Image (cartoon, rainbow, N blue to C red; front, side, top):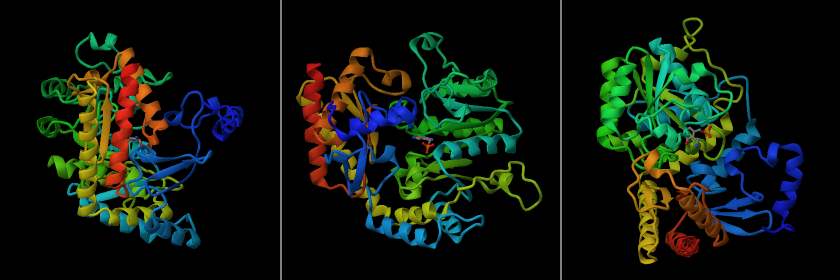
Amino acid sequence: PDVSSRSNAIYERAKRSLPGGNTRTTVYMKPYPIYAARGAGCRVWDVDDVSRIDCINNFTSLIHGHAHPVLVEAATKQLALGTAFGMPTESEVDLAELLCGRVASVEEIRFSNSGTEAVMLALKAARAFTGRPKIAKCEGAYHGTYDYAEVSLETSPEHWAQGAPQSVAYAKGTPKGVIDDVVTIPFNDVDGAVSLIRAHARDLACVMIDPMPNRAGLVPADRAFVQALREVTHEIGALLLFDEVIAFRLGHAGAQGLWGVDADLTTFAKIIGGGFPVGATGGRRDVMAVFDPTRGKPALPAGGTFSANPVSMRAGIAGMELLDEAAFAHLDAIGEAVRQGIDEAFRSEGAEGRTTGLGSLIKVHMTDKPVRDYRSAHLDPAGQRRLATFVARMLDEGILMAPNGLMALSTVMGRDDVDAIVSAARAAIRASARG
Ligand code: PMP
């Protein structure tokens, strides 16, 4: 901490007009956050002119790094033509066609401005379509801040003592009715999940799953688990919702393409906006008909002043077009190299720890035990301290990553960047092992 830094000076000002100086819990850092000034390629410069390799990419939302010339051009062109209209624009049709063309189960799409909104609209669509009140989600999985979506984001060993996951409020003030309408299922546990889903068969509108939930350990869902959810939702007449807000960065046809499953509803955000705010809810045509206004008031009316904003749409299209099969092969290769490099560093340093993830997504765990779900990913206080030391040392070594151990790579990174990340991780592992 440097009290004479510009970041600290800005934070001192921030404390007077923002609660705790913060407007986004996820970017808070003690004793003060480092403020970004600019980014180019895979690097970010802070307001004190220190540059670092960006391995968080705005929490996985940038897949081509910063200020990519193709995206800058697409956005700038639209800026000069106007940024928002009380009318639809052709750009929304272009991006909808692109996404429907990539994900087999997505026949129609509705745009919004964030992943939170995308999930909210998907859950409301499932309720409107089925006429049922409840939703099911996995213990520990993050899906944004809609009340229902954040139930059981955090549970504790007292809850685990009951065996099956409990539905518990994440935020103070969550109404009891919300808790009662969320069924929390165990991730990657076929029997546990299926029996809970069957127990609420007549009330469940949908089962929502992120196939590789970051907060629940960034472990890929077993194929058998996803298949079981697909089958049991068919059996009880509920919808299967794939939250691909992050996971869409795993493959050209999205996570569904990799897992080989067709969802009824899918949510997108982050990378599909080319670095601008975006969200999208897509799915089966008959389900998406709940939004259709052509026959009078729809079952689910939904506006949104900035939804399908043309700057987000145009930058999003440019970014998605750059993301071809070759780009995914590159992301898979550098992601695997970082995971292997960090795992090897843990082994050769004789330190407890390992990585999970797939493709461009990596999570560092301070444990040798198998990580399969939220509970097994949970760190004891000593593990939490070691992770904090690791992340702080990475920052000093010039690598930006999330405090919870998450890293997300971008297409503009090369082998040199991989080497820099791995050698920084080795130094951070040594530092964290010393405690
Ligand atoms: N779903 C998932 C799986 C997410 O990871 C996130 C955000 N990290 C969201 C939804 C919410 O997206 P947003 O932050 O754009 O509201």
